Image (spheres, rainbow, N blue to C red):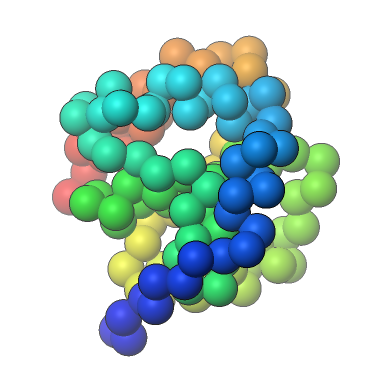
Length: 114
């Protein structure tokens, strides 16, 4: 498995400033090690991509998908990230906004997996 080059994307900061309501809601519950004492990063560069949320210590990426979701591009992106050891979970904006606690419980279960 080749190492992931740490690149600071010129896209990450603007994405943080233009966060969706769903991203803001989830970030308010993930930041500062609130979930299982795991450190999540918001709009974090991973190789040529920017992950919505990344927990590097658990090699987990959380993606929040909305109307702009492109399954073909996601397959390429997922292949790259998994080839570098990351697990990826995806949630729809509506799930995060309407069932935040359920999304967090799902993340807890994912984080408990080896």
